[in-house]
Length: 330
Image 1 (cartoon, rainbow, N blue to C red):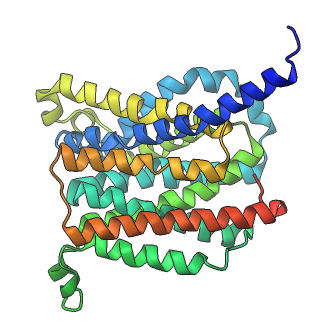
Image 2: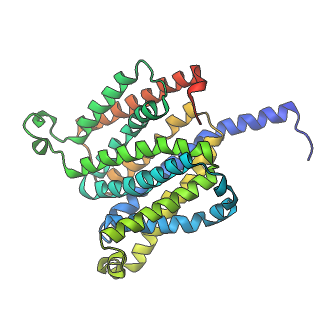
Image 3: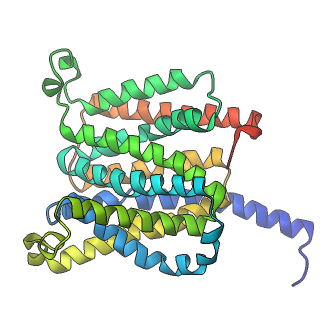
């Protein structure tokens, strides 16, 4: 193979810098399409069963990656296994269950916007677990994000003083907040995982752990049998159920994961954070445009403020990391 001259090397670096962020955006946008499959699947399956089948199909897709990296397993340290187990349990299994329930019982558009508070949670968790430094303006923007999240969640904010129910808060919002908590903590645990193993192995093993957790959860709830795994509603619409599950596991699952991490490899983290907002844009387009889950004007304004505040949280934290590279563990 011939050596590249400096001009060719610079050209390749420029092209990577150009398309890398767009790969991040594409992967995030494809993640945002999952509401299109989860919402109709909620009419056919129990939420836990949906997540179970999702893991089964993604594991089938990732099997070649897992097999090719099996030799690395013996090198994994105990601490890395701990992070992996928590990440698979909290993020891949439990968090996804609560997301599915949130879409079922809440306004899907509100749910997808509320999940933008996740980076605030993961930043605080990284501070507590890894000792990451917090920017001086972190609490300002985090407070704005939380307040905006409250206004996004309620349909009648003037009645918050009366009762949450009067203000329009419902169980779907609660499920979304629990999901954000688990996914935020899982993000931090995933950072611990990446310290001790390759991306391909980490992605594959997380699915294995998630599927194991889902199997145990279904066993505990008495749903690990044919009638629950493929209920009457699914039997009546078998082709629809299979197609939706395959789309969920592929278009909104395995494929965006690979695209996203390839883009992340070619993109500065500070840039990637902005392109990740494509997930919210795609999700809102689907839930509002196709499922008519609209928002009131004050919710739209609050959603914009929430996304802006979270973007600023990301921005000021990246500035801290740039000044203190020794604080970054991954």
